[in-house]
Image (cartoon, rainbow, N blue to C red):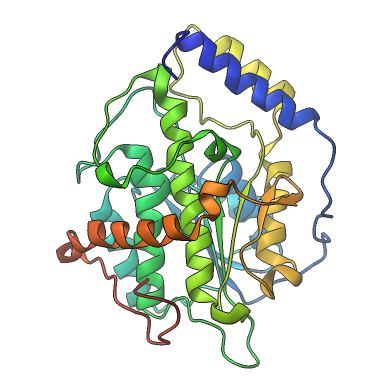
Length: 346
């Protein structure tokens, strides 16, 4: 994305939103409003606003105990989810997914509280106006969209908070909120994997797509490793919810915001409607019996060939484990889960 300037890429984003909004309906029916998941514990990142909050309200209304892992919105977002869902089983946890030390502290808190996680919805996301370094020196979208999720899942598995299904049990579920933007990315550059790259607004969508390719590739590799021989021990799914009217464009230039936000309200899905495919992956019976599904809105499809590439998935797994190992003193664990499943450490 080198030619054309900022307005060109804003137009592309808006066109993609319009196409997603007016496209034909999907092949999946939303789960019934009266479907209950009483007793399940659901962890949702980025649940203080937008899509994450809508998912939190829906799952809490269905009887789940909801853990809202958020950087901001304390305690107002939790109070609003309690009010909208009519549930008192809502708890807010502090985490900044751009900071691996903060992610480690969240994992420590979850471990000390002995929460067993039945459903993890890894939703938090952003599109910055320009490149930003995280406290550990990574580009912020690489950290938030991929590396923090990689670390969080590794710890939840290693600490036994997500436990692979045993005979007679339901499989726990991990749902990654990705994006169709992952299809715009080229192959992952493993020679410079994790290296900080500077960019401005003109190239932010390019790096957004690449970070979502990391995430979608990881989701497929995690599914393969957790479920050898097709036996679903941990149901791992990913999706693009479609264009959602949220604050993700908050870093757009001030002169463009009066144009962007009305168009988003007109052509993008409301958070409540965009939550339907997420809730389907979290709650539907059939998505607990298999793994590796990818949804675009309410239609099941396949991620890009790059995301499905098993060799790239294995390289991503090992390269990211090496990055996390550098931060092991901050509480990161990349040890093999006690079940011994899969091809290597989580």
